[in-house]
Length: 432
Image 1 (cartoon, rainbow, N blue to C red):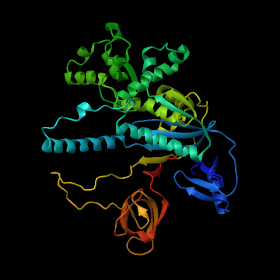
Image 2 (cartoon, rainbow, N blue to C red):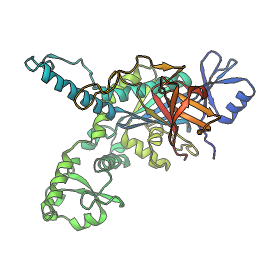
Image 3 (cartoon, rainbow, N blue to C red):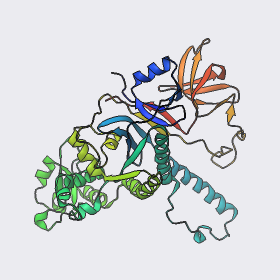
């Protein structure tokens, strides 16, 4: 089945128009009425005047590692994507840089007063690993606004509505005490315990929410007293205290107690950036709708949709229709790669340069690392067609990373740019 992702359309003044079916786009291109504007996401530009007739909504499901993006018109999904962040890579790089700097400072300036004691950070400051996620999302929202007539944005503001878990009567008791309340608590615990029974470690089971300290023995309904348990372990535990049930497994008891108190690492990254992201999206001037992770799951279950990042995005907020048309869609997989680094020399483990400094020149023969190229090799051992991300060399022999392999030593003479470097690489996910 062919991918039904719609093709974006601009008129001759680069004003976004209604997206169209790929078959119609192919017809316009073959008749010479349009030209390719960009490949990712695929966009054509008309050679005549045209105006949009519909309004569209961008839906965003932010995550620590992946963010789901979906573009909707009423109950139809027009376009979908999954954006992979590099926040954890940035965090690791910052730690390595900090270690090198501290080691050097300790060697060279051991008697100097520390600098970190007299530095203040501005209000709203976020570390680079977190702000990277916000900027990735903002960048793609801005791209879509330039390519599609967007009138509103929906975003998942909180993964778990913890206030409403603690006090269900904050507002709307029907909403809070209805089906959605159990979705909030259950989804929180599934994420926290990695969909695993805390007692036996099985993942292939229907999970119960178990009161770690039984209610009949004075336990509460607080979320910190709830754990995931398979049916069999829940029956075996009955109303026994944890110290009684796990008397022969003290290490497991200590591990569960520790895990119950730990916050979610991924959820912590999302919660730290949620208000910053909302503020950034409000700067677009469009209507902003927010929703919780529990509401997203409720909408997805109600529509009978399997879980993925982009389907979660399509189900964000109260604007989600009762029925969504999602068949035969293939998400665009977008991976943030950055634009290189500023390190001029690679050092060995002692800190001394192990090779010559890299050139200040970025572009060679009209290509630069990160461009997506198509190489048609007509002779030699590597005859064939290769499409992928290029790594340039001064010699003119480039490496091309395709979906399956890295092909080395392809001459620039065989290469043609199909998408200029923009800090991301692209592929397509599984069709559903």
